[in-house]
Image 1 (cartoon, helix red, strand yellow):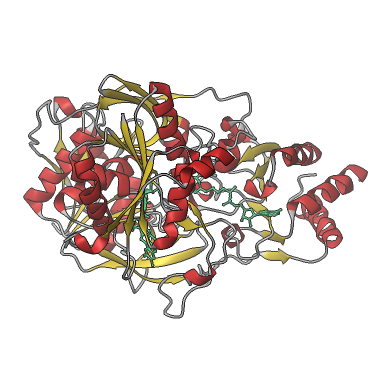
Image 2 (tube, each protein chain N blue to C red):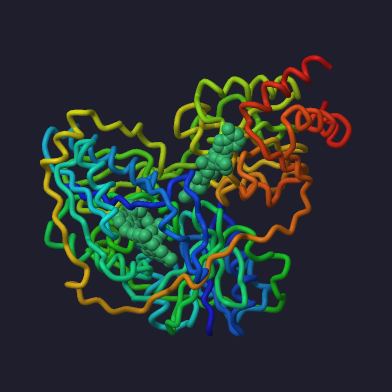
Length: 314
Length: 256
Ligand SMILES: Cc1cc2nc3c(=O)[nH]c(=O)nc-3n(C[C@H](O)[C@H](O)[C@H](O)COP(=O)(O)OP(=O)(O)OC[C@H]3O[C@@H](n4cnc5c(N)ncnc54)[C@H](O)[C@@H]3O)c2cc1C
Ligand SMILES: Cc1cc2nc3c(=O)[nH]c(=O)nc-3n(C[C@H](O)[C@H](O)[C@H](O)COP(=O)(O)OP(=O)(O)OC[C@H]3O[C@@H](n4cnc5c(N)ncnc54)[C@H](O)[C@@H]3O)c2cc1C
């Protein structure tokens, strides 16, 4: 095997980013294997049975019944030591961020994270809040990679066959130091962003809490719901249940009308499925314009009040 | 409770970011720097933990050239007790594993109960430094903390998961924890704090004293992302822009 894909479970089945990671792994190496960890390892493995993979390792242990950084880390380093893959790949998920750097530190293998694409020179990731891209490389014999959402298309996974093999992980309770409680969701509020036809999205470009009402007025004038980027929620200007992005909602309205949103990847993953994107931003180079259908370069604080006036006069 | 907070200096949100002549990074001469935003939340959390306990020490640690003393001073002005500046004199180290080894060499003899970092930096965004250091120090690690609750020798932590889910985890101290933004409201330094900060100690440790070799990664090139999308650009007078937006809403997307 030259590439090992570390799989992740999401609500009982394979995480979407794990599928995309398999598609990426098949592009990067000729012999690809995967590792499924935990109680549901067999179920995850069976989801891969029609893929062209050398094999899928299943690691089960009573200490792996729920995710822990300690348990996953131990399992992954034991398999890397046993199989010596040149590349270890995974989706760039919260779980990967949580334990993969431990693998990197322990085995002294560089971890190139958050890759959005491959180029002739190397691995491309966004830097400086998505304003620039960077190309990264490593001359190390072994490298760990994680792929951002949509870096690869899971429809391009090469079909074939794949059998499962149990991997005996050695773990004792002294190695797993943490105790995790059940995951839960916070109060969701009474707005349904997922089914809204039109969304007005408020970014930090609204500048001040006092300016937030103009977004609600605009929303009222065009029959939209209001959503927001994370910094706006973090500042307490708008309720957290309105947040769009990797740690908030995933939306795909008919129109996504953004006001002073820069277009960082963690925001974009939650709205890029929108049918139409109209973005206002004062910076002509703002990354949001890369996906906007209509790119309005200007100051939201000047444009929106006039727009509301024009709409209300119609 | 002895807490280290790692604060990094990064280009601010409004900073110019001209690419340098070699195309390898931005030209730092034109950059305005700020404290990495998540690190500001980590610092506030450390101060709140110390104040809640009524005793302890908060140490701000930053690595980089002389200019990073500014973010250390900012931390001291907000109430941290002392600072450590890991000084880089030659070219700036670019590899997360190297950087983590340097931090580890400096932090290990201090025996911190908690090492707090931001979840990722606004510049290179590797999102791994705190966890790397935790593993190198042999202590517990956790990421994306949105609430902390210190108990006797333990910490209970609310972690953010994806898509609006959360989870509580508990583990023994010492620990290295990365902080997600938004978990508290960072304070502004008071005038008294700013004056007091001048008397607080900043220890400078030189990087060249550390003997470190490892496998590494490098950023070879930076470039402006290419647009594949064909957008209509509307960049004229405000009135003309407003008129065009109304037309789009009405006749093209048909939402009004
Ligand atoms: C693990 C993780 C999870 C995250 N999850 C999310 C998430 O779920 N959702 C999310 O949104 N972010 C998330 N983020 C944060 C994300 O990386 C960005 O920091 C965030 O999306 C930026 O928000 P913004 O665009 O509002 O602010 P900024 O990036 O500060 O952008 C403000 C924009 O407004 C423009 N502007 C300023 N003033 C004006 C004006 N007067 N008129 C017009 N334009 C103006 C500026 O040019 C700039 O482009 C996450 C980050 C991490 C690391
Ligand atoms: C071209 C180029 C230029 C660079 N210029 C600089 C520079 O000017 N200054 C610089 O320090 N590094 C610089 N670096 C190094 C690099 O950005 C990182 O410090 C390193 O790779 C870790 O990645 P990160 O900062 O993205 O860490 P992340 O893992 O995303 O950071 C997580 C957290 O770790 C802590 N942390 C990370 N680095 C530091 C630090 N240096 N000081 C204090 N806390 C820290 C912070 O709490 C931060 O929130 C440069 C790298 C490149 C490629």
